[in-house]
Image 1 (tube, rainbow, N blue to C red):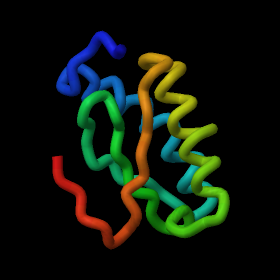
Image 2: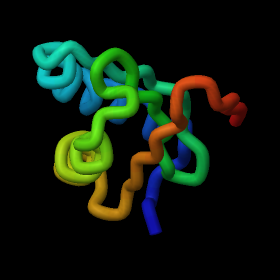
Image 3: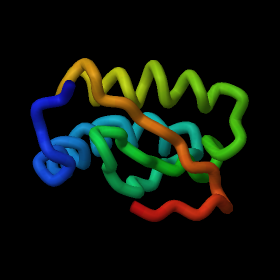
Image 4: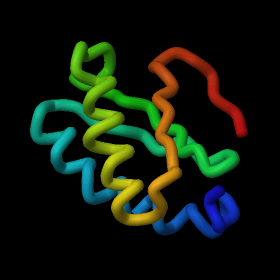
Length: 88
C-alpha cells in the first residue's frame, strides 16, 4: 500500500514524468499527464508514441520504472489511448 494520498503524489509524479519526457520527445513522441487516482498514474502517449509497438515497454520500463525509483515501488502507470475519454 502506498502511504501517500493522490494529492501528495501530484508534484512528485509531475517531477518524475518531466525526467522521462525528453527521451520520448527525442524520438518524436510525447506524453500528457492526465491525473492520479488510487495511486495509479494516468497518462496519454502522443505523437510517435501513440500506437507504437514499443509503447507498452516504454510505459513499463521507462515511465513506470522511473516513478517506482523516484516515488514508491508499488506505483502504477496506465496509458489512456488517444481518443478515449478520461475522467477522475
